[in-house]
Image (tube, rainbow over all chains, first blue to last red; front, side, top):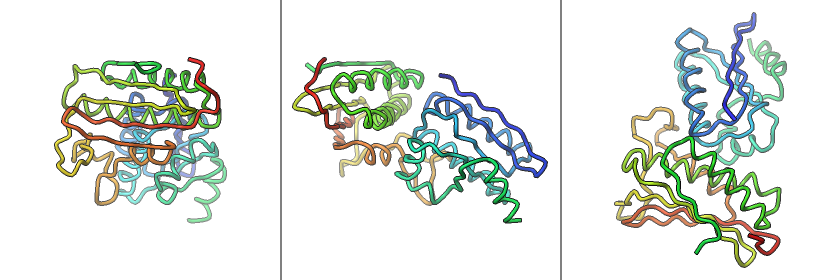
Length: 117
Length: 146
């Protein structure tokens, strides 16, 4: 299955990236390009919605880490929405649960962001 | 001879095909449904690593897989043909040092190997002058039916 990547920016300035499909060595460049494009457009607060991701490998993890580094260089943030155990397991194995903020829903991420302001 | 042997040209697009085939053979070999995701991901990681290594060093050489089901174990061997030249027997890095995307902290952590180690029931990585072999196995509940 191909990877679908769409985004929108909320009134609060949070850019939500909806990702659907399999993120692997073949499709990850598409997500990488999207993240780079958003940062180049001045979008530094990103929330990647992983709820429709069916497969994620280390290439995808690498792209997310790369995106995090890019937004942090601009005092930005890159957080995730994910409740799928099969995907969360990969973040736990690699220790990346300590690196990414992971939320149960977009609404929860928005609420926490408002609370942190 | 292995139960199933597979070789594919070193292109990222074929890694998904390899994952699908391995998952199907694992299921028929009696690997529990709950473990199939782990098999699929670990083998995908090993294939991705081999593809990247071949693309850097020998893009015309195919990546090889051997799938064996015997003695209530399902074993997958992913072989590349990129010689390991580390006298310590370390696995050669497949990502260029300047590849920013894969840099974690101060070093270049190979996330793929971390994922394989975390998912496979047993892992053995052998670096030889002929290439790197990643051997992974999982328990199979039933006797092989393939």
